[in-house]
Image (cartoon, rainbow, N blue to C red; front, side, top):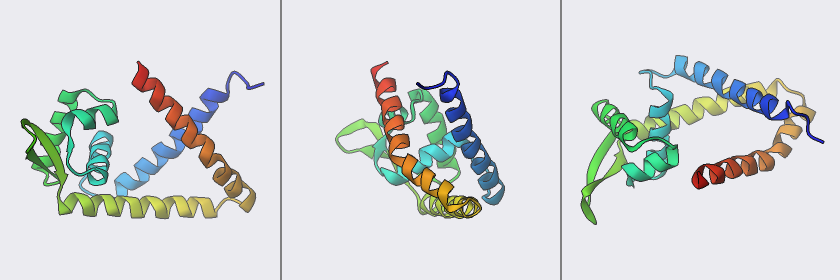
Length: 150
């Protein structure tokens, strides 16, 4: 039987890892971007040409919030808004070379930080983390499905 505190303990552990990574990365990469800006950049680099409404849906943000982020990132030279040829009223988001370079640098530094932290663990802990990956992915998918249904 699962303890009542397990969901909170799991989320505290995952959020602690994420929070510490963000802080360390934020200090290493300038100019500073907020979390939502980085998430939008990552999405657009991964899916060039995505529309604002699809980006809002993927990020679970309001369309006007994504539009605000797009305007900020466009002014900083990270995104280009192009007219969708299929619907002249819609925009497609394209990453600039600066955005692709920034996300590549972010991924590289994140991997270095995590690799270093993992190397400080013993092999048994690293193997437990490796073994937990499928369950964590399934948990993320379950949470994604629940968000889609609401």
